Length: 246
Image (cartoon, rainbow, N blue to C red; front, top):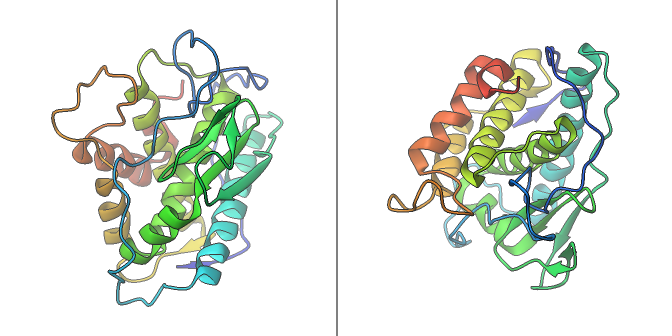
């Protein structure tokens, strides 16, 4: 996946930007949360690192560079959207890898292994580096851009004051927003997809879907593989207009 320095453009029409609010550490809003708690896991399963795609994306250095590139492109993209609506953009404060359970906390609660979250209380993204590198090696580098885009979208939801009653609504919208950030970045030239990257997006998003029998209204639900891929590609193909932001 190649990158360029050009900014992605596009309006965020009719949205009122809220100041950072003290929602739960769930990446986005849950209705009237009781205290601070970490976001639900992005995945219920931890990919193994023993299957590597033919693109040879295997080294930790490559992974770290992809994370840095994905962060830079996300920041440019969302800054452009906010600017188009004459609003001030505040980037997410930091992105923090961790290796052990409890090494990083959100709102006083330790983050578990095999997880990636946006923590609203500290305005940061944290991810289990072993789990994330395993996904990078199994699925490909496109998964890193999706993962970062999904968690960054939760930070944007907080900035926009979006607060749904059910976790799944928040999560599927974040998938759509991640798709919009990536699709718009490709169309603007900020990102160039390599052969197979679209398949990696589809494979990666589907891999983090809930079990088919997961109740829609259960706290922590993210959506089935079909729901998540549908939401992602709606955003990818139709931009933010598909994401019900306002």
